[in-house]
Length: 185
Image (cartoon, rainbow, N blue to C red):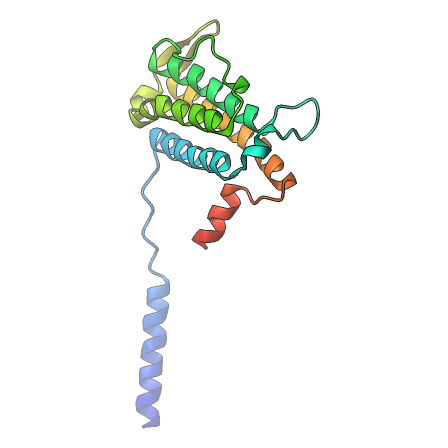
């Protein structure tokens, strides 16, 4: 009996060792376009959730006198997205001449942000690795690769979200990126 148990144990150890040496399946490579699309989807979720989770009264909150209010930060992101995505799409900026930072209510600012995302959605959804390399005109700034332009849009939105997370923390709120990560784990 001891001999059988020893053989079974040895067999399991050998099998376990062999299994442990089997490499994990490689994750599929992420292309430039896919990486930008995923980054855009992530910041879209975080900014949208930040606007929705923040109370109307806190949209006028200013972390210090020389910075934008919480609501104006959302308006600033929307202004920037319209300008950047219009250039990426090769169309006139439909928001030209409108300063969304000046919207007054939560409803107006959340809608402005949502509308700017809706305008940008197809610029990101239709992006391919090939179209990311195509040069597009930026009014007054020359030409830039579409992928670089859209990467800048994601980077800027993330910078502004970082500012908003400070505002939220100062108001005792947990930012969406932290709250959503806690739910997934």
